[in-house]
Length: 92
Image (cartoon, rainbow, N blue to C red):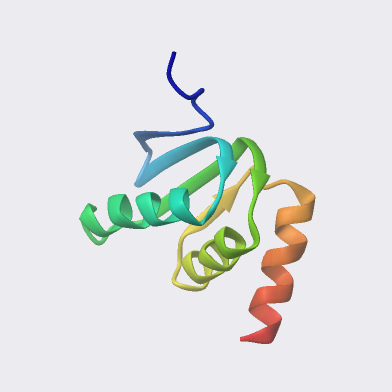
């Protein structure tokens, strides 16, 4: 048996933006994978949906804060993650 899936990225188009719906645990390794996917995208609007995210590691929060500062929109963000992003942005 393999390791259970703990993280998934679903890419689609939502109106005028590329939508990445994330689910599971977002750690620094998964953030790196997401960063590679975002780098491969055209320079258009990006929307991250965190509705199905169950856990976010601190380094991943820093990554999300940088993305948001660079113009990505984050929706359905858990309150604790939103608070951490605000702290990261305040420290920048």
